Length: 363
Ligand SMILES: Cc1ncc(COP(=O)(O)O)c(C=O)c1O
Image (cartoon, rainbow, N blue to C red):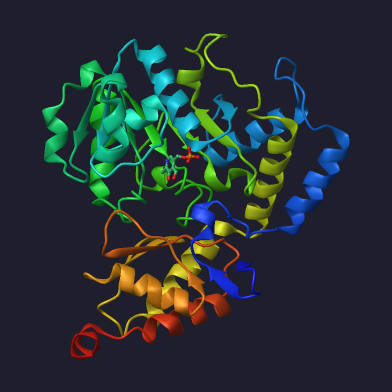
């Protein structure tokens, strides 16, 4: 999980290349699988069947516990969400969405429509789809929407860009209940939280979100561009043959990379590994109540009141890479899942050396 700069400086990467480098930056198993695939077949049209793609779909459906469902492969997170929302329009015949304050789902037009970022949205407001943004985690607010007019509600089980925001446990079930009672689909954007990183293969299942559609990207193919939209049987059966398409999605290289990545994630038993790292880090930080750990598994935020940028600079000086967020108090940690005790100890040492607020104020 190290990256090396031009001068040979070695950095411990707790940013994980924006949550993509799930197996680290040059995983040997991926290198072997891809070099074999490169010698065999780089690309062929999705007009014909490809065993690798079908195997990747089967493995994802089995992991997601979806029987009789389907997988559409594409190339990026925005594209996955774009297609998930189009699927909801096709299946329900409705054209409105519900999303939540603080959301980030991507920059294509439908994905941007459900993204709560005024700066990104400003140049395109006339082109965006109608969306009700409800306050994150607020159960009462769910009653303010006419769900019989909604095609889909979309949410990240943990809002990452917003600053690793979680919601009360019962809220996720309430979202699913309201949506399903009104005939709307639930789209879980597990682009960051999925694949074991949060202590279970898919966090939405643990939280009782009962998604009809699941979107995956980021580390799905270990850093090779790839994304997937996973749907249950009921949705799959209502899609027409012309509904979805992509030239590159699910190509031989991406499919091979997905299979190699899934095998390695399973071999590593990522969910329990991620949980163990979180527990270890929490234990090591008990002496520092000013550093509050948010999130789950290996999708974590360090909340440090009024000092997020200062903490990131401090860690960078110790050659530890972290991520910022839209919350200036929160520093994000989303390292490769191969992170070991040595790296945890190194991070904890650096955090304990961060001057506590009283010392910082006196300095
Ligand atoms: C939760 C979430 N959804 C969607 C996206 C968009 O993914 P991409 O940049 O691959 O289009 C991101 C990217 O950061 C994300 O974090």
